[in-house]
Image (cartoon, rainbow, N blue to C red; front, side, top):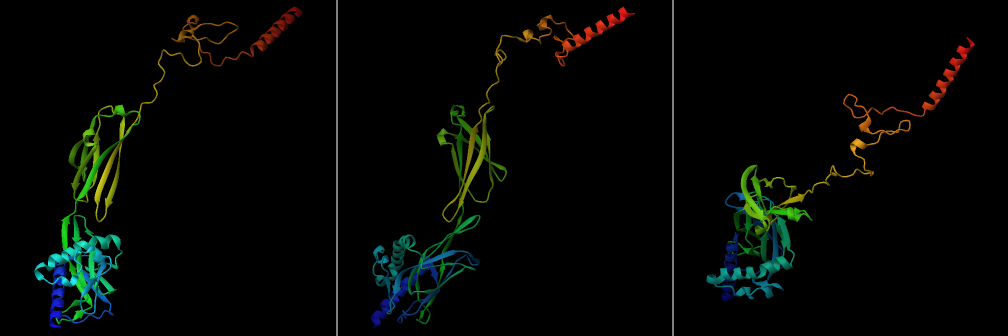
Length: 361
């Protein structure tokens, strides 16, 4: 009996050592009593950085990888027992190697849990605390999404934790707690500038290279050359939060116009901004007909030979008309010929009337 208690004591000590490695446990482990497997437990995970930075909005997930037994041991659940290279968790009793062995269990089951299973529970932290209630007793893998700020990314290391845990009086506590280990990284953005050509049928008009001036928040940042050797692409990294603008330097008399489009992706794994400058070729419009071409309508007439209206059966050329105030032709507007016969008849009638009147006198 005493030997059995010593084994359980070592098991609990080494498991707590693992929690201290990948998270920070709030309980100690000594000799054990039996576990009431009919109970449910709870788990509170603290997410903080330093002494006073508590995180709100951390997405936290737990995956049960082993179950508790009445005698205070833990047995890997189906599926996880096949993935773990260490099959007997109760054999992890040597404090000198326990930390490395629990780390191996964690590495063996982590991807399988996250990729092949839905979380047993998920919670969002409030004032740094993510709480899980009504959980089955066992060992849990605890994972959390990265926490993104403008200049930094906070990464929470995954860890294993047992529910229940032991208090200072060697009693099982069914409300477990742990603190995640947190690292901060300067958040960098992958930026790319691409050149795209919209000039089908006119690709021979492209310049062999172009220079682009990059502006960061309105100030000069860099001038880069894009050409075939770099696949018309430029890549760089910067912290997030800047406004990027691009001024393309094209050769004089270029018929290309430029437009800029962007694709921005920010999530837990990717921070990228991709900018594309599209150059569209604008071909010249059709040229007007040259001066020596014959106007539509045909004929061999030249400006000096343009016919004038038929006046009393005569057709005159401009060359035969007198110059009037420097003009080569007389005004032709307002000429109407249909009243002429009427006027002639009326004139003859007046002449005859005059002759009769004279004769009568």
